[in-house]
Length: 82
Image (cartoon, rainbow, N blue to C red):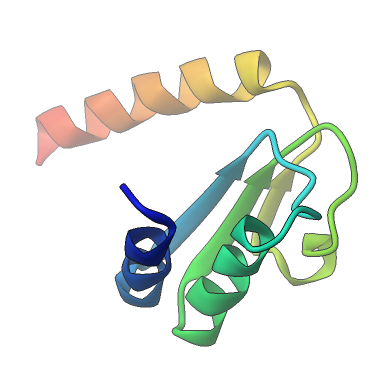
């Protein structure tokens, strides 16, 4: 996937999840801004602060290893029920 693709996908997503990024290196750090501008919800999983913390809809400051496994397990259960 190219950077152009990533920006296009961010324009069309409902949920944008940032995993393990400080969101300070551009142009990739601008992608969540595009998603937000197009109505997406923003979730950040990062142990440090980011410039997007104040606008995130949900934020986890725990390690990725603590957050993602239970989230994936729960999503799998929800998908089975659908």
